[in-house]
Length: 349
Image (cartoon, rainbow, N blue to C red; front, side, top):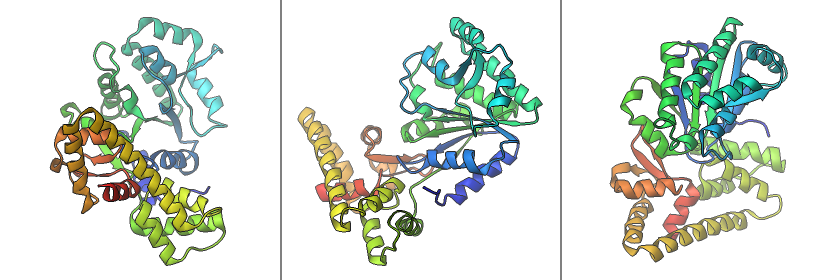
């Protein structure tokens, strides 16, 4: 499927890439808002492979419980006894990005033996410097970075990693660094971390606003159904699923075999059932907690977005962690993860 919109975010990221690296950037947003699709579009179609070398490290779907797991994701092992930069030069002719830092097998074994991030970061810095000497700008992108948030190696690994990223950007101006996450509690933790003040910036990739969502429906209807939707049909879709790209795609695809109202009602029923069982489990374990959570969710009966402090911190963190709500730490707001979740809350409570 052809990429749709996000020109504002693309322009912002391309503008960052054209300048010297000086900040670490966090690309965040609700679940399935299109963060990875945005970055993939930039990597594959919007940057010059002759100017940039991209290392895209995706932690999604990878079980990381110890230091060795993280290192194996960070590096790509090679048998050849060639310098990493030579391997990189041969690889980037055919691929838009690399999945890890190329490392000779014996070097990787040494890094794993020493079990210290100092050696890891020193090796990566040397590789990045060699890339710079070749006249290319390195970019590191880590998707779902929060997966190593609780990992400890002489203290929390995440703090060592942040310090290293700050060194690469603000101090050495060597490499652009982008970290993607849909975990807004993790982003809040980063946002409030004093050591990162003036060293990081944030790019929100939110669900589409209404105008863009309606245009996206037109785009999909033509692409998938080879027909146009009426204004009433588009308004109905938006009233159920809002601007969540993946849900709009799901609706349009189902229209090949089902009616619109049937499709939307079925999706809403599914979401209501999930929420019902979620609340039922809580009530069974702790009625007091259930009452507090129900009271918190009832606030959304009249508003899609509220100030975060309207819900007690422990309750809002629990609901964010369970992907019922999305927290925007920059704005200090909470909203359901999607319009579909919002509709389920309003109907169930």
